[in-house]
Image 1 (spheres, rainbow, N blue to C red):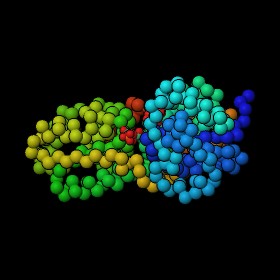
Image 2: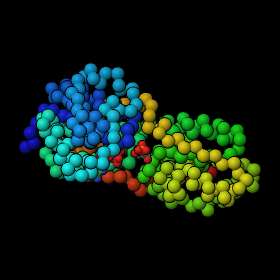
Image 3: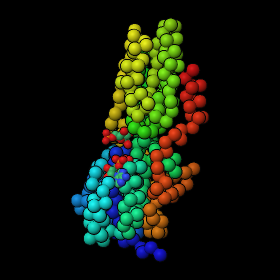
Image 4: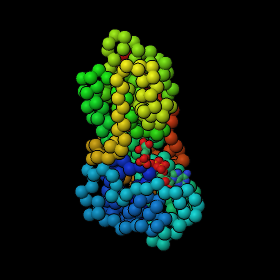
Length: 327
Ligand code: ADP
Ligand code: F6P
């Protein structure tokens, strides 16, 4: 039987996402509630390797539930890809007597945690903190709802000026490998076209429909593009379209990192609090090396290995809805 954890570490890793602070708060306070010592590891795996670790108490996480970013900071850490780096990190945790780890991050951070947990005897629990929502086995990831609402607010504003000028707008949202932000924000703003990495786009059909609009003197069209789409993002799509529609006024807006910041939405605060609480409960109950997800409003635990990218899982139903509602 696994020994009971007494001191846990919590870190945020990879791209930050709104709600990470709410998750940290939940981990610290649930840990304290159970009499555990809780340590904050700064800058993700980098801080683990550099022993940049601080003791956290209930007061350390006061007044952060509403704040974007992460008080623990985050990083992408090259050294953690190597066994040597992970060994350094392990030694630091061991020296401090930390015997459980909560990792809040995306699929890359989980891949790191899988390796770490296979090599060393410190149990890990992952919380899906990513605006991309590209983690398998959970309906929610911390930050997605806020990011999508930020995108919707911005796109609504762009639509006003687009309509006023009868222009084509191509708006690029985040999502290197995943089209969820584009799909959700595009449907919610009535975009005529949504281009995502998971699906092929028929550029000829798109051009034909725009030429037809031009012929009818109704050339106003909103296109939402995920940064990782097959053409290489909004600027590339603009080039392709402008070539075939030389007279059209085509404007590009790249929303960029604005989607990663800001105060987390109510949903993100709630799921972060719930997941943070369950991460500590998992460690205490001996449910190790899993990630905590929510499926059909129930907590759901899958091995960390299973949290691979949810690529290609966007349903045909969604794509049909996009097509019908934009016609
Ligand atoms: P995210 O967690 O948001 O997907 P990244 O993919 O950048 O972000 O991963 C965050 C960090 O996790 C990386 O900088 C690295 O330290 C660690 N990591 C990612 N993949 C691996 C891997 N295959 N092996 C070891 N560590 C990894
Ligand atoms: O994974 C989250 C994410 O915001 C992606 O959507 C985006 O491609 C990437 O991170 C951007 O990373 P960085 O902040 O390192 O430029």
